[in-house]
Length: 465
Image (cartoon, one colour):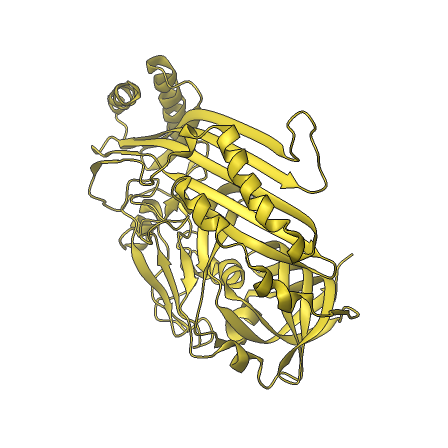
């Protein structure tokens, strides 16, 4: 068994005087389907593109005299894992000769646990043909003539993993997390809109029927058929009412990470507008960023990060927690076995505020409401969000004027201090996040945040291209 191979590798490396070792073994299967009215594959008999990915391997961390060594392998045999552990040990030993900073891991009680598949229908047990049939049903509803839909595209994905974490401290955790994603977009004769969006919700294929039922009715689409007027793209700084998930993720997360802030911020410090309270919660059922244990075997938790603009807690790994003299927060995360765990968000959301959507619009003489985003990025100091289209706000009302191909950009400080009001209701929005350390793309993880709208006092918009 693989767990025996891992235990063997750990025992051999610990005989060399190693401080600590852990291993993460993962098996992954991923299914992607893209169904579009613009692509037809005749031999399939239905327009779709299919992709499947399989991966398997292990990542090993070794701590020797206070310095890390890390290696990974696709060979999880007894010999393969021992060779990988030996490479990690040699790297740690080499680093110990030259490294100045010494790692002191914060204590975490080792856990033995087995977490079975938590859904009802395992996606790996559903054939491609059955998945295509479900998507055909979705497409049949999407392309109903009464909806007057011109073009459509539907993206389906599922991810199934088998994970094992084992450490020299005695931790042994097995889990089988799965995620389902279904995203549909359609274009009417005038304008485009999302039909359904669920980004990597945890669970099985039983979620698909519930998602299909979320396709808007023809009556619900009627307001979208009003005569939108294409307006010139404005340039300059304007008020904006927009979803808070990506803004909070790109901006506030840079202040909450106990690894990268380097102690520049003090707990109890006012770091943003007092309208903002932010929670990081790894325990929300079915949310894509939820987990029982992080990649270091530390239990996931519900944590209040910012309360009314005041920094209450920072996200910590065992390493950063040991450096700062605090407890690990269960945020040691990695995209897969080839990545070294670093501090990153789980389900990261802004607490809903006190304002209705209509109240957010009040008092805005001229502003922007982003409708459809197609990319977002951040550098730690600045963020940039690409907008496929947006609507104009005039005299406190949402107009039927549409602008296309805008970029919304600003500094972290602008966003954190410029949020004037937060909507009193929210929805969960999936976000895929990457983190760069020393110029290297280090971690890409699934997180979630709330999509409650916020009102920004002023933000820069410019035409794209």
